[in-house]
Every structure is written in structure tokens, then in C-alpha cells.
Amino acid sequence: MREIFKQEMQELATGLVTMADHVATAIEKADQSLRERDLQLAEEVIDADDRIDELERQIDDLGISLLARQQPVATDLRIVVSGLRLSATLERMGDLARHVAYVARGRYPEHALTGRMRDVVSEMGAQAVKVGQQVYELLKTHDLSLAAVVEAEDDVLDRLHRESFQVLLDEDESLTRQQVVDAVLLGRYLERFGDHGVSVARRISYLVTGDTANAVHVPMSQDQPGQTSERLG
Amino acid sequence: MREIFKQEMQELATGLVTMADHVATAIEKADQSLRERDLQLAEEVIDADDRIDELERQIDDLGISLLARQQPVATDLRIVVSGLRLSATLERMGDLARHVAYVARGRYPEHALTGRMRDVVSEMGAQAVKVGQQVYELLKTHDLSLAAVVEAEDDVLDRLHRESFQVLLDEDESLTRQQVVDAVLLGRYLERFGDHGVSVARRISYLVTGDTANAVHVPMSQDQPGQTSERLG
Image (cartoon, rainbow over all chains, first blue to last red):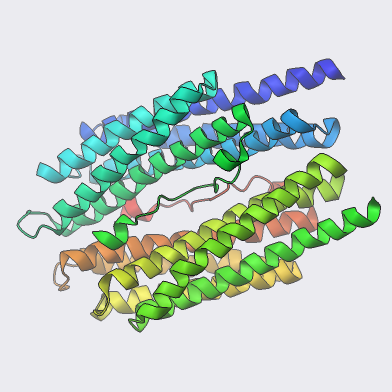
């Protein structure tokens, strides 16, 4: 019984790492498909999202089965409950990568964006790719210092997101309606991707330290205060 | 022990109904603040979101404490795990209502939108208000037929969302940059609000029927297929 329990707890951890690996790949390819107008890459991201959803289902089944059969307590219970939440967050990050790929595919063979707008959104994409890699590392290592870095660096995405609104609202900036629409959506997807990265970082901190003040109450899909949509967008 | 258990399970259910009540009020006021340029109402929504977050924390604490101390199995386990997920979804719906209020506040004393664009987004707002009320009813009654209605009616929000993109992309439609930005964001917030309503409906169906095919694997914050952001936006 105890052996099976340990083995299933290990499976849960491995499942999350695999999921994060898929998410990191998805955002990387989505970003590239957008920058390089690569239709095939966009299609790959869209098709691969099913696999991420499937992994979430497996992790959920395993977690709920663990709760039902093994009735874990203390740290083990914390790990299982966090696992269920992490899988939901990773699933959502996968969706957001897919959304980026949809925009790339929808505009093909054109670039979705041009000029300054493209530059800012490309910077956001690069930062999101970094978050994807960090989240993967975090789930592998449970490294608290990396968790702190992810939290702190979310400012970069927020700053770029605000910058994207400045460009959008600059009437001298020549943009088609479609470009304005795409830029708003892409900005939102990438900013949310970063928010979810912070959510993962906080949950990992909670798992490692058990410090509830820090992480137990991270809403599933937290939003940063200081609403860009109010201030600039 | 058994008495306390029953009492705490009841508290969990009541907490979710209270949360849904707050969310229904939030989207109603947010919608009205936008339609009527009502600054005070917008402020109320923004301030009241803390209470929704607080309720989520309480439900989470209770759910995790129930898992740890009472080690529920079968139906009871399903109720607790679903409760944790429902609270996360409701918290997110509250955030989206707050986002709508931010836009209303940011544009005050002007209307955020005008003309056809305002009409379509107002229709979306009215539909989201309806979803908020239905979700509240659902959590109170666990009525399967209402759950089916919420799922089916999500098409209305999706159709209106597509319509909003048609207006946005019509270059004859006179819109400032700010209006385009606001309309994209509001459309996205309201569409997501509806998606989360569907997620609640599926989880309630799962709770009532135990039919996993139907509801256990609802991603935390599911997106509808047939991406509007690709097709029109």
C-alpha cells in the first residue's frame, strides 16, 4: 500500500513536469509562428493542445484517486491539492499559447502586426517563452529562488503590456483595425500567460515552505492589480 | 465527529451560494455602471471584489481542512473537490466583473462605447448578467435542467462576441482607437464570464449525476472551440 502510494505521488509530480514541458514548447512555437509567419508551427501548437488537456485529465484522475484511496494528510495532502491546481493552471497556459497560434494562423501569410506594435508584442512573446521555461524548471526543481525570480520578473510583462497600449492609443501609429484587435488580444493572452506563471511560482513556494501567507491563497488564475485595461487600454 | 462533518459540508455549500450571489451582484452592477456611466457603481464592484476573494479563501480553507480531518470518500469527496474548483471559477468570474467596472471607471464621465458597438456589448453585458443569476440559482438548487440551459445558452454570448468583431472590423464604423481597445477587452471579459458559467454548469452536472464523461474533466477555465480571435478578431 505504502509503496503504491509513493509511486503514485511520484507519478503526480512527473505528470506535472511533463505538462509544463509541453506548455513551454507550445508557447515557444506559438511565439515563433507569430514572429516568422510559420503556418505549420501554428498548426502544431493548435493540434498539440489536446495532449496538454489529456495530461490534465490524467493528473486529475490520479489526484482524486489518491485522495479517495490513500487519504493523504499533512504534506502529502498539500502536494495532491496543489497538484490539482497546478494542472489546471498549466492547462490554461496551454490554451493561451494556442490562442496566440490561432492569431498567427488567422493572419497567414501576412504578419499579424507591423512596426512598433510588432516589436512590443514580440518582446512580450519572448518574455512569455522565458516564463514557460522557468515554470518547467520550477516544477522539476522546486527551486525557491527561481520561484522568486518568476514573481519579480512578471513586472517585465506588465510593463510591456502597458507599452503596447501606449502604441495602440497613439493615433500617429498607422494600424489597421485588424491589427488593433490582434494586438489587444495578443497582449492580453501573453500578459495572462505571465500571471499564470506567477500563480505556479506561488504554489511551488507554498509546497516547499508550507507558508500559507505566501501562497495557499493564490487564486487559480490571478490577475495583477493595477489594471492596464483601465489605465491605458 | 459525524455531526461536525455534516455541518462543515453544509457550510461549504452555503459558502459557494454566497459567493455566487456576490458574483451575480458584481456583474449586474458592472454592466449597469458601463451602460449608465455610473462611477459610484463601478467603484462598488471594484471594492466588493475583495469580499469575493475572501470568500474563496474561506471555502478553500474549509475544503482542505475537511480533506485533512474527515478524509471524505465517494460522493462527499466529489463534493469537496468540486467545491474547491467551483470557488476558483467563481473567484475568476468576480475578477472579470471587476475588469468590466475598471473600463467603466476609466472612461467616466464618457461612455466607453457608442453606436452599434455599444449595442452589441450591451447585449453581451445583459447576457452575462443572466449567466450570473443562473449560476447563483444553480448553486442553490443543483437543478440539472438549468445546468443544461446555461450550457446551451452560451451560444448567445459566442454569437454576440463574433458580432462584436464584425462591427470592429467594419472600417465604415466610426470608432476611436480607445473604443476599439475597450470593445475588444470588454468582449473578451464577457465571453470568458460565460465560459466560466458553462464550467460551473458542467461541474454541477457532475456533482449531481457523477457522470464523469460529462463533467469531471471540465478544465478550470474552459474555452470554447471555434476561436473568435482567429476567425474574425
